[in-house]
Length: 193
Image (cartoon, rainbow, N blue to C red; front, side, top):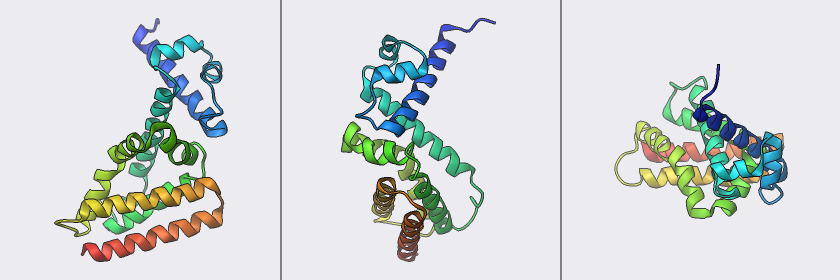
């Protein structure tokens, strides 16, 4: 059975994003060249340029993939029917644990802001996480003014704590950061009622 051009193109894009994700996690954005990514995917550098204008655009595709994977993991976790504050704490704890993996921490939180620029990076992050966080805060009883700002505060705390973990991962640090986040959710949940 012959594959269509669209199927081949989709496969090539997938292979490039996977190779780029692995190399960006291992070597960082600055330490990874498009030639290395192409070689790891088993294609030519010219094929990379067929799909993306430059390394930064490929990196953006990798960031999107990391967000999509995290979203899938968080949506499939057990306990999705508990209290809203418990769901916020559980999803935040999972995210923070994942930040020890360079394919998450290094790509999203270390290289992401500097490579994509603060505004673009933040917009991508908020596309995935702001509305679900706002929805959980509203479900927890928050209404009126301030719920959007509470969501931004919680997401900002996850970013800061995740950067701490990405910079020096270890079980004790992860546990401390998770506890800090749980304390913040409890404080916000108290304000939300």
